[in-house]
Image 1 (cartoon, rainbow over the protein chains, first blue to last red):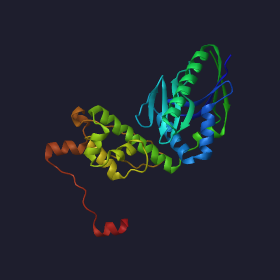
Image 2: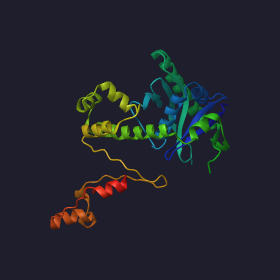
Image 3: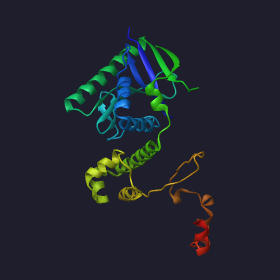
Image 4: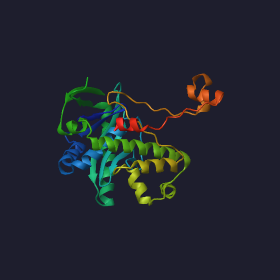
Amino acid sequence: MIEIILSTIHVGSARRVVTLGLDGKDLADEFLSCLIKSDPRGAKAIKTRVRNIAEHDRYEHELTFRSVGGGVYEFKRPGLRLYAFYDELPGLKPQLIIASNGGTKNTRKDQDADIARAQSLRARYLAAKPTTKIRLIVLSHEN
Amino acid sequence: MKIEITKGSSPVAEFFSAPLSLEGVAELENLKFVDALLALMKKQGISRVELARRMEIQPSRVTAMLSGQGNFTTQTKVRAAHAVGAKYHHCLAPASKSVRWHAWEASEVHPAFLRAESAAKKEADVTFEIPALSHEDATAAA
């Protein structure tokens, strides 16, 4: 059975943003950890976009948060992309934006591979969700 | 499905939940401005190229602006607003206060709720003007 761990990184008025851990591997957390160290300016730009988008129940922006197909969206800043999808859990408020993985500006082929990985992670999560115990880690200062 | 909720922390969570820097706040305000601009562009079917033409700037500058990059000048915001038939407003309020914007058409408001000066203008042709600062006032303000 797949283990699902959702780790909260931000709680907005409309959406809770989490990173997706599947089977002990959280690619979004790994990507953001590296980004914070290697490109603090880029990480801050992604943080600003996360803050903005979490204030909307559904959001789409052709340049900063756009659909890339298969239910996956990308938080975008030139040279950086964080892939995510919307989901709902019963009784949870606010509901979720789940960040699955990220990528830097590489070739179109690399971007397509990152998008395919995001779509695959979303599919695995949605398939496992009905029968799996989900561990949701909330922020230490949340009530 | 069973959901287990626990509290926890990680370097990534700490980074994202920490207050925004002033630079981040400025970028967030730019993104909100761009959201409103894109909504008006969409409503009126204005493309990025058309916006650039109306603002008399290069399309690449429009793309950079819509990405929320850089620091917009007030002039850029005023020109972008004008290009989509809007007007740019801003407001300063104490940090402890919440601010809510609301746009409405005067024709949609019942006369009883019109602002006093508007009603007075209609009925008595009275105009309200803010006099220019006198030399003494300007000196005191400085």
